[in-house]
Image (cartoon, rainbow, N blue to C red; front, side, top):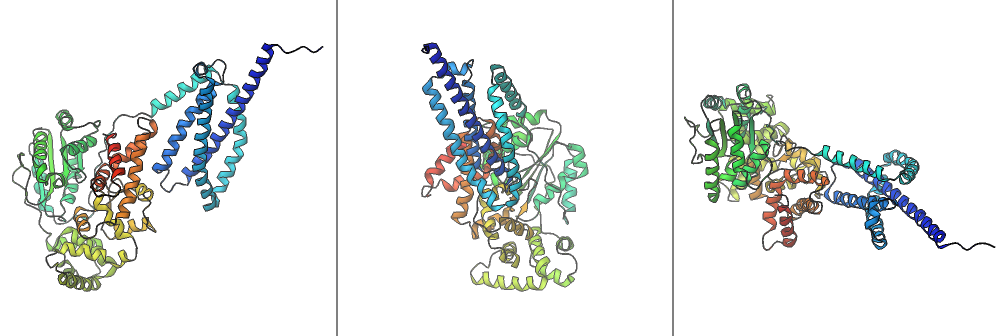
Length: 572
């Protein structure tokens, strides 16, 4: 007679069934994970921004990472000797499995849509996709072997490996300081250049380069910092800091601290002073200081800060600032430099020829230069126009534009304003539909924009790279040494007053930064967030500028903007 199975045999059979079921579940999870990884890799390969993924995609990758941790916990718990299993009840295991499946489904729904678009839009991807699919079968066997071989020892080894990888990825605080390039076209400032070199040979030089907007103050400072005598004296302790993205003393100290390589903090004023006290002889150049110093309510704070750092005997200080007034509370080196004046005719002609070449008649060049007041920025703009359109066309357009603006009541507009106006109405600008729209955004973005941000902001422009190239070719914008698109302050001010950006364009850029802030909030403290922190650091002044506009009480997106401001506090 057949014997009835004992309770022990029944339990053993049930346990074996559970083990087989859990093993199959683990295999299914691993295969879905591999499928999702394939889709993420394709998305990365197809990125238009060199593998730098937009915040929305990073958010899904972050959620996928969280799901991977849950899958690891579930698979680990299937071992009879697992410590995890001792702490998880059956109901908790069911919930954990459901969360794993939901997380994978959400990721697959998002990334497979992009995956299919990649295939439809680029048949050249099919070879890579096919190869990945061929490898899937092999990975399937590897997954089986991995699950069968799970043990506490293996788990310990994996944790050790992950820990080592994480620790190796950590880096110490590094300086962001990078000197701007030496100006390629630089004429007519020999006297001022010589005077500054003499002052820098003295003890504890304190030098202010003054002048109207567009006079070439920054170019003069850039030429000085690269002079052989200066580079030999100060070597790697030369710091050139553009202040036009700072709004107060704390931000100015933070910016200087970042260039010095200091760790971020709430107020780095004392940290900056302490660093410079012990540093070798150093040269600090604060460019466009008027941005943070000119507002009356900031005068005292900025002057007090300058007083602190100029008490340091080993520090040489150069500032560039608009106007004819120097900040108080600083013993400026004598003799004072006079405010920069327009270029002499010969220097203006040489500057023009370096840009527009010398095949134009001397009479035409002289007539065109008479329209610029010999201001370096105006010469630069007009010479770029002449290089494309010729002298006679520019002279005709100038007369037409001047007649137009006088009839509109703007007869007091400067020749610099007219130069900018003519550049905006040039055939090259008119031939690129959204170039002026892109330029209109730059006054609100003191940090400028990288190619990544231009593309990921999803601005409604047909060819954003062509827009960018056009602005550079017309000298209305330029690429700084970090390859970020910027506009000079006189052009930014002109655009802010006469051609402010459309709200829909501002909204596109702000939405991109808001998504970055949400990513920072959702994954704060994780290794994945390090790239997000770098992006926010590069755009801190941009975000603050957009928030200042977006926190007006009548703004339609006020609630979302308030949340963005709160998320930004996580960064500080």
